[in-house]
Image 1 (spheres, rainbow, N blue to C red):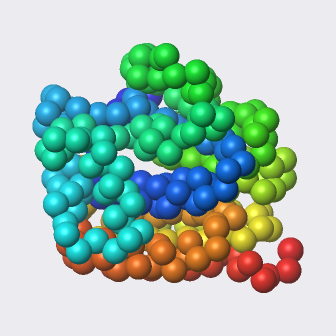
Image 2: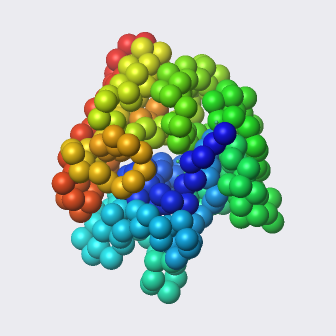
Image 3: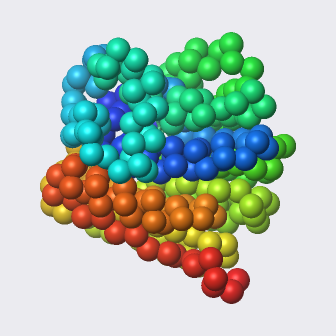
Length: 284
Ligand SMILES: C[S@@+](CC[C@H](N)C(=O)[O-])C[C@H]1O[C@@H](n2cnc3c(N)ncnc32)[C@H](O)[C@@H]1O
């Protein structure tokens, strides 16, 4: 049974890191007139009420978005994300934290499409309510790993897949790279954004090693590490937040370096690193 509920963790440091990258990728997709499709395989509820019981119980958002919401010196890769948050909270007070579906919807044009997937029954019901009446959005209730292969490639062949599991099931650390490699074989030009936890005991290394061994297109990774300090109550042993981007757009690495340096300073006791797992000029 699935027990993870993102409403307890919305707006935490991991969300901030992941959503800065997501907004950069969405912004890139809007640079051309050609329509794009976003597939969000672990969508959660859509958006979150920060005054609600779950967010107030952990107050995790205070150690994430709480540190950056009012910043006046954010570099442009972070500012794009903050601009969307401000548009979604127009009276200047941070009340609702957008989940990945809400951020993606903020960038959609008439012909773009958003495919959402969520397996948890309660979150799926919330997501369905959130997405209703928007004909550009489709909602599925499938296992994320199965859907990664089943839903790719989408009809619109320009786009992005967000892979953001809760890693409640330990086999996800090996399942993600396995299914990702299958999806990349089916949709080589797609951009894929994978979130992973940086864990004290190093279990996430299996995921990174699996990607290095099986993905033969350009792939970039970045991490914000919090050392021994716990960024929130998300998972035992959590030491930081990591992202893998398959087929990153040109200069995405520079943008995430700039964003990472600023976030490391502002989220407190953090260190940021960026690495190419497969360089654009590496031969397959
Ligand atoms: C980290 S949260 C997603 C957060 C969301 N992507 C965001 O950024 O706002 C992970 C979600 O995956 C869902 N989930 C867990 N196991 C799943 C599975 N096997 N297939 C699909 N969804 C799953 C959880 O219910 C949870 O809502």
